[in-house]
Structure formats: structure tokens, C-alpha cells
Image (cartoon, rainbow, N blue to C red; front, side):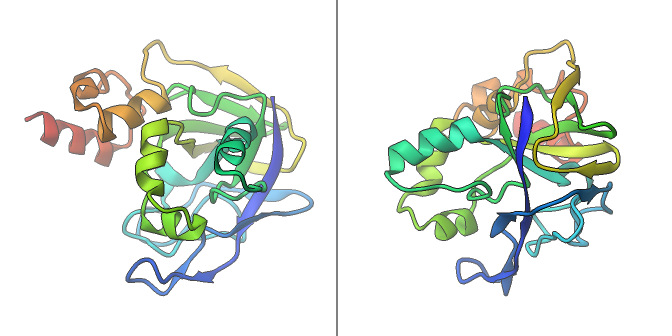
Length: 215
């Protein structure tokens, strides 16, 4: 299991939402990239140096510090869509190899390289920017049906990451809530919602949203 590429965003115009820019255009960078815990949502801060988000109401902050997606899943989408999808195409900061990102448990911890530790926090929910960026009609519906969302992670121990760094799973919590399971519950299978609350590492705002839906 390893990091295939580390991807940092370049600001681009965002005609798909009522905001001026988007950071979804992530591209691989050479050399080490500093990883630190960002401030709260609303600041635009994320975990990788040189990157940021612009839709601050919905992205960024401690629980969405880093976004990871598996190269194997990109390859499946590449075959299905009939087009090339380079590392970073889904706006991910880390493109991984040999790691089932969507099958990771909420609260699972990964050591990357020698010093960085990240914790799986929640699933990526597709939005209009994602659909517009890919230029695929019906993309939100298609991505949702596949339930392979990739994972947001929070920074537990800061440091540096670079392409080629090994990834080691150093902690797996004792519950069944994977990122894919969480995604299915909050999108297309609400009958699964009661089973989510055992995942203590769920972001507080997600937990509150789930409780409101259950009530």
C-alpha cells in the first residue's frame, strides 16, 4: 500500500456554483508536501500546504483536511467512461495504490511515510462542481449509484508526504461502518442510518445531521 501521487489544487473559475473559484483541479507535485491540521471549516484551509478550498460552507476544515481516492477505482471509472483519468482527476489530494479507500472504516488510522498519521472521517458527497468539472452528464447520480466515494481524512500527526510513501493501517475500530457504508446510508439507503452512530469518529456535524434525520 502506498501513495501513488500527492496532488495540490490550482484555482480555476467555477461556473457551476455561485462562487468565483474552485480548487478541484488537483495535480501531482514533486517532492515532499507539508501536512498540518487546518483550522475550522469556513476558513478555506485544508491539510496540504499550497492547497485550499473555495466553497468554504461545504468543504475544508479539520474533518476534511485531506481527500484520498484509490487509483484502482479511478481505473475502473476510466474504463467505464472511456476516457483518461489522471491522478488527481477527482480532486483528490492523495491517489493511492493497493489500498481500499472506500472500504476503510470510519476512525481507521493510516501512517503515511515515517511521521504523518491520518484518520478516516467521512465520505465525499458529489456536488455540482464535481459534475461540471468532469463534464459527464448525470455524473452525480452515477457516482452515487456506484458508492465508491473515496475518503476524507483528518490530520492526527503532521509531517510531510510524498509520492511513493508507504501506507500502513495502524488502527481499525471495532465496528462495521466503512466509508462506502456511510455514503450509502446518507445518500440512497436511509434505512442504514441507525447503524452509523456506533462510529465515534464521525464528524460532529454529520452525527447531528444523522440524528435529525432519525428523529
